[in-house]
Image (tube, rainbow, N blue to C red; front, side, top):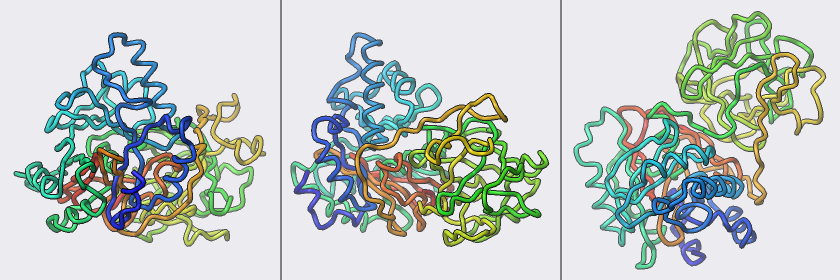
Length: 451
């Protein structure tokens, strides 16, 4: 893996690299090295089939499998791995009971890749997508191209097409190989990291973009990571102002569907967090309004979230990350602190220190369910993603993947340490999302970019 990691093509194309979550115990220094030296196009995912190499379909005890899956989820989340490649036999898919066990006992996972070539999509327990590889162990550049072409055959452009391909490097497949494949794709096809790919897949199937640490219905103060100020309704505008004991700085979150929610000002109980004109582009200001505009809070790490507008797939943003009082706006998601917010306790004065100011039920004013979002123990450099790259993972020996499509990185932060989410845009009909995982993940260009 170290030799592949040093390939000059790494970083030129989104890729996924499969590793074991047990590295957290067995070789934390190596895990730390790979995260710290990862490019914006690299992301680590879990190899077969979680916390230790296993074939879950053949486990005789459902209880033992549940414990294994739960341990896998715990280790994977702390190691920054949000996708698991589930192995059974070289041609075997995931049994329904096995898939349900992952759905019930691994709540932080974005998705599962499976070996049953061409088997398509299965959504387990209505919440966890499992997707069959279009190629298991693709052995060379031409084979990858052939399988991409075969999987794309007949696509009419009316809805997204998702393709997940794995390749093995024992016979010379390298990051440069994937870069060559990407360069030969038809115009409009985009390679993305597996984490972003699964978020796109989730969004296309009306699932929550980020399954981990969802915001419960309740009342909160929204605190900007960039400035430490609070989001407030002020004379019809949505601004960041010094935090105060003011209902104009308290927001009622009420979930709708697929992870989206309405944010209503506590000041009058009728005014919503809106974007002026409901526009889809960058720059329109945030205002208090009465249009049914909705937002999804996507977990980043710790208590930080970015807020994605349902209508535009863009983020709530503090202009230029200023610390001054300022009206907020809508902007392409980019993973910057200017787009990170904490859903803080609505009580005043705030309880505890800033780090403890996460949502919690205190029996007081409409507080929500506590969220104890785990932090990653592995150090990671906060390197912003390139403007035209998502991320991808290449399995040390078996898979490569891509994540994120479109011109603007929706998340733009290292996948693992940030909680593993690159933001995904609404898959438009004109967007063919291809994933080469193994994972080489490809995504066809969408009209919007997601984190």
